[in-house]
Structures are given as C-alpha cells and as structure tokens.
Length: 159
Image (cartoon, rainbow, N blue to C red; front, side, top):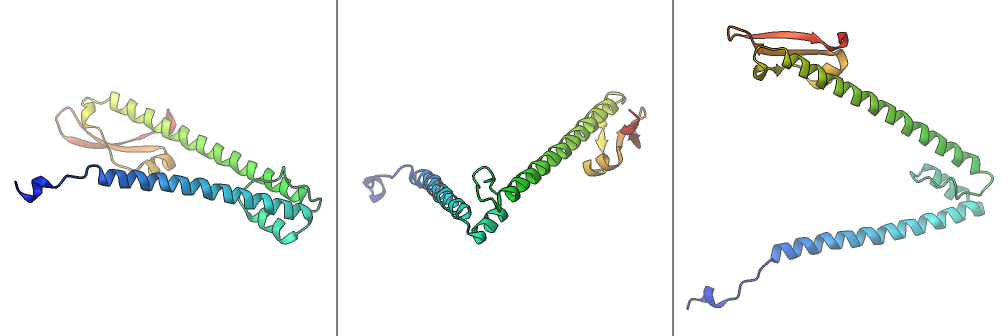
C-alpha cells in the first residue's frame, strides 16, 4: 500500500472552518450588541442626572431615546429630534412610492409597446431607465414588416 492510501482523509475541513467562523461572528455581534445597549443605558442615566456632554452625544446619535430622557433641559430637544426623524422617514417613504409608481408605469408602457409590434421579440430599449423615468420617453428599436430595424420613441406620459 502506498503512503497516500494509509493516511486517513480529513473531511469537511473548510466547511467546519467556515461554519465556525460564521458562528463566531454571530456570537461576537450578540456580545457587542449587549455592550452597546448597556453603554447607551448608562449614557441615558448620566443625561437624566444632568451631564450635558452626554446629552449632546446622545442627540448626535442615531438611536431614538426620547421616551427615556427625563432631563427637563433636553426632553423637548429629544422629542423634536424624534419628530424630525419621523418626518424624514415619511418623506423618504413618499419618494420611494413615487419611484415605485414610475417604475411600474414604465414597465406597463414597455409591455404595451411590445404587444403592438409586428415582431415583439425584436423589441430593444435604447435609453436607460433613469432617462425614461426623467422624461417619460422610451426610445426603442424593433424590426418592421420588411425585416429592417427601425428606431422609434414613445411618450409614456400620454397614456
């Protein structure tokens, strides 16, 4: 027997290492989350006790701690920050709805164009989705009845 046949082969070495690393990162993330939460709770207590530097630091942070702040000098400031953050989220949601509506509109428009072609499989869009959304115009090419490629544009705003 050769030396290679005598040695037992290890199985799953890379897989075990990868899974172990993944689990290690998850555990580290959980531990870090616990410490961050603990530090934030300590900072809230300090702010409520009157340490202005800590209150200012909490204001600059991303967390909403407005319901936990009892310091009368900062309570209104934290509530105003919360209100501003909610307004910003609402505006972002509205913007996303507008973008989603435009994307849907452009997809419907392309489908209508394609359905009305002699050879729907020859349909190719020539301009970018960004340009389409900005102008509402789809530039496309397709083959005509004679097999020649022609370019056209369609204004989806007129639908």
